[in-house]
Image (tube, rainbow, N blue to C red):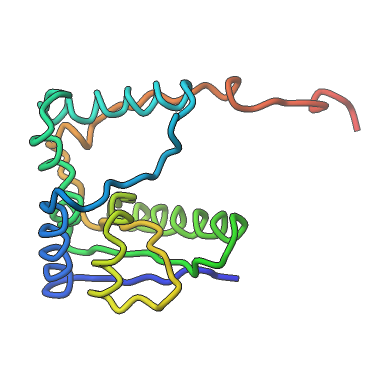
Length: 183
């Protein structure tokens, strides 16, 4: 079905959106992003907390330093300084099957970028500012922001870009049955 819409931004267009998002991010009255269920199951919460500790640790930010964490989050909205920013939207009436197609599309963009020597960073934080983005980019009515994505060259000297995030072993999430049987 190809449910995606992509807004690819560079130069002045990217800067204007980034400026509008910086203002929205500084507005403490703006509702927070609710992208995880509450309560989050323990197995997911521990991984989320581990990532946060590693990410903010690499930036030298203490977990309790709310202002520094907010400034770090704010970097999302200038696409981490990348020359190209993308905003992805989907028709809100579509169901999880279309979201699967969308995830495959996003990963394809990321793989294609790497094949060309570029780096990407998918960013869910843009969802919080859907109204700002919709107005600024003239998003079609009835469309939701899926995520943003930065595209450019990674700063190899940045500790964040060298994070080693542990992954669950295959045996923790996959079950194999009948593979040892002869056909």
